[in-house]
Each structure stands twice: as C-alpha cells, then as structure tokens.
Amino acid sequence: MGRGLRTFRVLAAALAALTLVGCTTSRTPDASGARLTSPSPNPVDSKAADLRTRMDLLLGEHVMVIAKESSAARRADEFTGYLHLLTTNGSDLTELVRSALGETGAARFDKIWTAQNDYLVNYTIGVVTHNKSKSDGATSNLVSGFVPQFSQFAADTAQIPLGPITQLVMQHMLQTKAVIDDQVGQSYPRMYADLHTAYGQVARIGDALAPRIAHRFPDKFPGSASSKAVDLRVSVNGLLQEHAYLSTMTTSATVGRRSAEQGAAAGALADNTNSLASLLNGLFGTSAAVQFDQIWTAKNAATIGYASASTGTARQRALGQLNDVFIPRFSGFVQAWTGLTAFSPAVESQVQGTITVIDDQRSNSLTGVAADDRSAEASMELVADLVAAGAVAKLRARFT
Image (cartoon, helix red, strand yellow):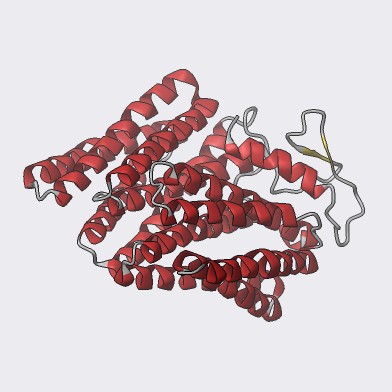
C-alpha cells in the first residue's frame, strides 16, 4: 500500500475531529477507511488529487535524494543507503505509473527511469573520482538518451506536445547535474540555490503530467487534479517535504562539522520557512504568518541545537524545546487558524522521526539513515495533508 493511501486513511480519521467553520456537515470515513464521504467532501480529497500530490512528492524526493547521495559520495555506508533509497523512489514512481497506465506503461517507464538513475550515479562517481570519461559518458547518456526517451513517454501518456515537455525535462536534467557539480565541488551556497531551483522545476513536470493523466482516465482518478484546493495541498506538501529533507541535510552538516555546508543549509532552511510563512499570509493574513515564523524558526534552532549538542544537558534542553514547546505551540497554532483538532500526534510523529535521523547521524549509524530520513519525510506528508485539508475546510468559500 502506497504512502499516499496510508496518509489519507489517517487523514480521514483525523478530519472526523475537524471543526468546520461555516459547514455543519459531519465527515466520517467510508467502510474501507480510505476516503472521506459526505454530501460536500473536502475538495483536497480525491483520487485525482492523490495522483498529482503523490507524483510531485516522488519527483521532488528524487531530486533531494540525488543531492543527498552526491553529498555522501565519500561516506560509503551513507552513500549506499541513499542509493537504495533512490531505487525505492523509482519503484514507487513505477507503481504510480502502473496504477494509471497498467503493466506496459509501467515497464516502459521503469526502464527509462532506472537508466536515468544509473547515469546520474555514474556521473557522480565520475566527478568525485575525476574520471572525465565516465562523467562525460553519463552526461551524453542523460542528454541523448534519458531526456528524449522520457519526454516521448510523457508526451505519449499525457497527450501533451513533445516540444514543451522536452524543454522542461532538459532544464530539469541540467539543474540536477548542477546540484551534483556544486555538491562535489563544495560550492554550498550555490548548491542549495540550485537544489531549490531543481526541486521547483521537477514539480512543473509533475504538474504538467498528473492532471492530464487524470483527465484521460477519469474512472481511475475521479475528481479534480488542478483545483485551487488541490493546488494548496500540493504547495503545502512541497514546502514541507523540502523542509524535512533540508532539515536533515542541515543536521548532517552540523554533526559532521562541515561548517561551510551547515551555514548554507541553515540559510536554505530559513528561506523555506519564509516561503511557508508567505503561503500562510496569503491564507490567513499577517498575524498568522508572523506567529508561524516565530514558532517554526524556534523549531529549526532546536533541531540544529539537538544535532550540535555536546553534552547530555544540552541535548535534553533541545529535546525539551521540540517536545514541550514546539509541538504544543504548533498544534495550537494549527487548531486556532484551521479548527483542526487531534493534530498533535501527527506533529509528534514527525518530530520523533527527525530526532531518529539525527541520532543516526550522531552515532554514525549511516547504514540506516536514509530509510529513517524517508520515514521522517513521510510523516511530514501527513502533517501537510492535514494542514491543507483544515485550511480548505476553514476557508471553504475560497476553494469552491
């Protein structure tokens, strides 16, 4: 069962406790527990919305894992872990394609995507080992092999013009390659800027494909994949996924005492916080944005503080800031602005997931850090979906 479906099973249960402003219709899960049912269901909750959100998240994760894998190229156990995560990510994308296009489409996609991953890994190895022949060969395969093959696949399956999608895919590939170059060259401020650009660029690919696929197969993907409500769900998920992976990149650099990288990563984390605050400003106004910024900035500081703590006392102080201050403050913030109750367990799970990753990093348990990293990010998806659904329910008139 995919993370998207698991997320919405929990979402359905949590939304049963949602206080809907201006709407008296109750919400309860159906017999399967997988979807919400009511005379006026929340528009973020449809299979078409799931498809777009899931596709963007998996494509975004792919970019983040490439960045993490290239960062770990000189740390063998960690490098291997993120290579496994790259494979898992590709398998999940293949399953998503299978749900829409069946076995033939999934097999075609898997062949193209697996080859791309091989080329990207070979490029990284070539750059790290100064093997120009290897890196040049990988670049050639990406540009002349992956880009046209994936673009044609996208044009065929989503029925969109080949030219524009080819341009999108080529831009994305060049930006991903730049992330690897920056990472290996230890050009950290540029790397985090390029990573943000590549992360946003790949979402454009998902946003181009998913709505058209949903439109082609309305029996499989009923509902809208491009409504304002779904746009919000996708935006919240994207920003919080970016936050989750930037957080653990920052703590990795902190634990590893890579001070130049830590500074650049912390700057990227602050930029992400500003983007989240801006989104909330557009929804609820300046007061909500300012309040969120204060809560989230303190959370970032406590997370980094836990990673950098040199004594047990300092570690417990940082944990107290996360568990005893951040969780109740953020849960109260979300309840105040959306009416969503029963939110704390989702936040607690995400915080604990992040702590587990930092503990892996601190203890040098690098064989399992990638899997734990993904688990922490997956728990953030639940937080994102709950926040988006709560905001849409609170501001229903703006999303109908």
